Amino acid sequence: MIFMEIKFEKAETLKAKPDPSTLGFGKIFTDHMFMMEWNKETGWHDARIVPFGYLSIHPASTCLHYGSEIFEGLKAYRRADGKVQLFRPIENIRRMNNSADRLCLPKIPEDMAMEIYTKFVETEQDWTPSAEGTSLYLRPFMFGNDESLGVHAVHNATFMIIASPVGSYYKEGINPVKIMIESEDVRAVVGGTGEAKCGGNYAASNRAGERAEQKGYSQVLWLDGVERKYIEEVGAMNVMFKINGEVVAPMLTGSILPGITRKSCLEVLRNEGYKVVERRISVDELAEAMQNGTLEEAWGTGTAAVVSPIGELCYKDMKYTVNGGKIGEVTQHLYDTLTGIQWGKIEDTYGWTLPID
Ligand code: PLP
Ligand code: COI
Image (tube, rainbow, N blue to C red; front, side, top):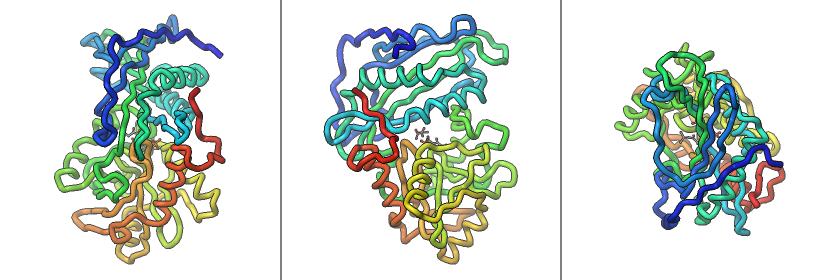
């Protein structure tokens, strides 16, 4: 079904595809990008796929001053049979609309968004790498674009999708990462923007992230913003722990991003009969489990991070090694199951994948 006409302007010269061993994360971009504009009178209009390039923005544009920006992250995967498929794109579309609601940006009707995502991936699908562990990362994003300095819900917005062939997010790849529990800065509070995927959340995270990096940690694990007591999430992923045989996921309180990888991991674990609970877990409980050896595994979940084992946690200069610094059984199983479905190596009995024709 056609919800809107998408114009196509082909790039004059197409770039050479990169060597898959040098990809890293988000450094190389494909030949084209998707754009469309919105205003109160016309709604969404001018949908187009154009050569990838710089934008020209009014210096008073709302996004530059007041942070009216939201984004998403999802991946297209090259299956063994050569086809390209998306993983649960409708979840990203719905989450972006929730983020839009929180930031007073316009929503995109689900059917229209789905058509745009699939059309764009169809156009750029040759950029989906096939080497082990690689994919085409899609970054849909939207920003308020009023050309005036008043603070209010925007009357003009732009929605875009760019795409980047990627390898692993962390330099460690699937090897365990070191994470520092942050006790000074906070990321989000209930009633704030923590459950929206908006640029401001990440800008406010950078100071703690830098401090952690200087100490040799990959990212910080945030505590709740009110009591600084409960475990929330890591900078670019949700977290889960295996404590005394049970998988514990910090519950979605409103200040945590509802991750699609998190949701998928929980569905897999529950479906396979694992003991799983979503609840609040305090840093003291976690520290005790680390001390008495009942913390058996810790891992992060995210589109960019996939399923990422945590090998070391640091809290107030106390360092704890998790599972001898090695990937644990449940972490490995989740990694294998999710990536197996995503890359089409195992049957998708959940109906999560969407092949692109
Ligand atoms: N939490 C944060 C702050 C993130 O940036 C991400 C990445 O998208 C996630 C969690 C994981 O979400 P998802 O699994 O939907 O990628
Ligand atoms: C993703 O995993 O898609 C994210 O958005 C994380 C990001 C901040 C790199």
